[in-house]
Length: 457
Image 1 (cartoon, one colour):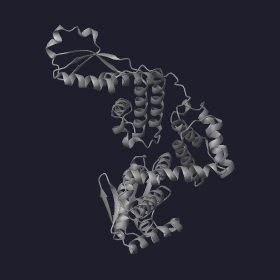
Image 2 (spheres, one colour):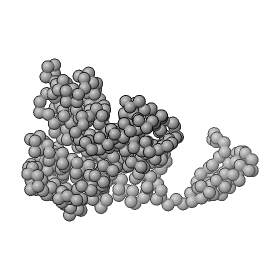
Image 3 (cartoon, helix red, strand yellow):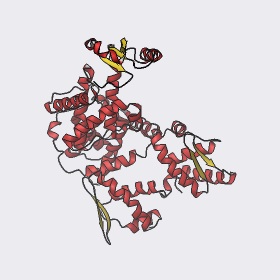
Image 4 (cartoon, helix red, strand yellow):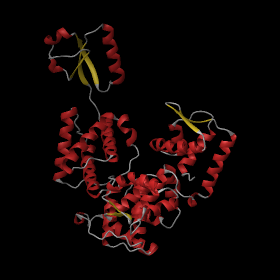
């Protein structure tokens, strides 16, 4: 049985625990994201079941291995030790592991591969491989790849080379946890001659987040490997004339020279164009200035008008008005070329910042109307954060409030205390009246009416 690093970490943590351990504690202790922990626990449960161990789970408490005998634990620890000693030599056995293997095997093949061949390589039945292929077919569609299957020939994947590379990068990335990304991947780069790639980016002031840097380095490595095997893009990047004078193009040329000198891999003009687009899509917007584009301005106005219509919220913040069109511009570029930014915050952000998330959904709706493509979860997360930061940074002047209190005097006191405590910098109750006194009041002197009962007029 082959165990991945995540599974080993989680099982060791469960073995060491004398009580239930929550997904939050597991995530903190292992460096695995909470979303990933939930996925991994399903696999861990299957692993333990093969050893006749039952993984219990309780809401708000977490996970616990039931009935741990010394013999069971010894056997399990022996499996873990074997995996840690000889991880690369074992054949993938669990569904996720097989899917990863099959996906890479099909993309890297120049010819049809029979199901029997895959079954023999993975030591499973043909039916098991056929079942694994169901989810893999759907995965290929996202990248514009076609799943070709012929009787007596097998399976062959056709489609754009850029799609195949994106599929391989995503497949690697989704199996990395935080520890893999930073301690294993980036640390290796920092302490190797390949650190020169990062230095080239810094030389040209290409500001890029750590997670986007890892994404780019993986993509660059896969491109070099694919090119060395003769898998080339072989065509001009659509609309590239708009980007050939940008800094990223000169950086891509320098990276191509680096690849030639160090890997003996020739990045031709089409490959350089592809690197350029990746750098444009993955770099941070910090330090960049929006170049006037009427289409982007029209899109921005349409979004802000819709936000105002649905929520009455307006944005007059100077920083926001500089950054928002820049965000829109780069989002549309990423959509056009099928590139992405990776933001692991999307899982909880809609619950943590519901208003800002709702505004980001409006952005997605308007963009989809024009491009036919909705925003990805990571793009929505980016806009959510932008809206949230702007709302929190906004300096509110106190609004004058008329309180219509239809209840007791104690309720009025309660509301006053609440306003003073929670909304003191936004609202001030200047007067309190009863519902029947509305007609006598000059409402023009108030910004808002706060009422303890519905007002029907």
